Each structure stands twice: as C-alpha cells, then as structure tokens.
Image (cartoon, rainbow, N blue to C red):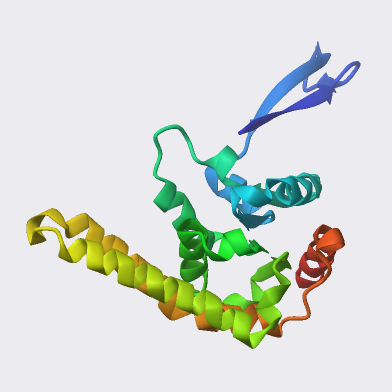
Length: 216
C-alpha cells in the first residue's frame, strides 16, 4: 500500500542552479512492513445466533469504532458462495472471540461448531469473552439439559443415517461426527463459562474493551 509524502523544496538549491518547488513523492511500504502494521490490530470474532442480532449489532458497532480493533462477523466476512464452515473455523486464528450465549446459541449446531473449534486452542479460556443472555447456565440441572439435548440430537441423526445405504451416507457420517464432538464438548464449555465472573450484558462491550486494553 502506498502513501504520499509532500516535499516542500521551494527556494532550496541542490548542487548547482536547480531550485526546488513543491512536489509529491509516492512512498511504498514493503509487504513485510504492511504485515507489521496489520499485526498491531487485534481481531475479535463475533460468535452468535441470528436471533440475538440486536445485541450483537450494539457490540459490533461499539468495538468496530475502537482504534486497533478489527471485528470479524459473518454478515461482512463471508463472501458470496464462500464456505461458511471455513469462516467458522477461522475463529481459531483470531485474537479473541465474543460468544453471545443464549438458549438459541446453545442449541445451534453452527454456533456450537465455533465453540468446538475455539476450545481446541491452548489457553482458549483467556481468549473468549462470554456475553451471557441465558442465565440458566449457572444452574447445574439446566446445564445437564443442554448436554442431554445434544446427546438426543446425536441419537436422532445416527438413527436416520442407519436407515440409509452405506454408500449414500458418507457426508452425513461426517455431520454425525460433528454432532458428537458438540455433545462431548458441551459439559466442558458450560462449566467454563459458568465459572467466569461474567459482566452484565448491558455494558459487556465496555468490559471487553477494558480487558483487551489490559492485555496490550
């Protein structure tokens, strides 16, 4: 990326009779220099269910205005005909993830896929900011119900696949593996977010900003 530098050389004589005037010099940074600049930005992945879009819009607008912050969100960053799954996997490459935890979120296979991806990362607990809408996660019995929900989803999909000929079920078998991964990770995830001193959802964006500033 290039930038312009304005030289003011009026009335300056350079080794002879040439007297300079105003001129514009295009100065181009190298790719490595640009990468150094880009690395100064912190990236935040917004993981959410579309039922919670109003809250997400508020958080997105606030964080996107902060200097040195780049917010990754599906409605902006998945190009036409691009892979949704690949975008969801990219949660692992971001500096932080904001998880908008609602009942709809906890029952969404796409949202929970993003969760199973981020928890693969070492020290992921320090990289996620849960924004809690569903306060039932603090109750052990309700956490059990969410784990049971995903076990039942696995059982239903597995039963449906068994009614197909084996050669027709290859892709669905991959989906079943995905569902089982969610069911397996659900207990760890719920316990992790329930153990955090989660700020109130009404000012969560300010708390996220403060946490990021502390880590810089």
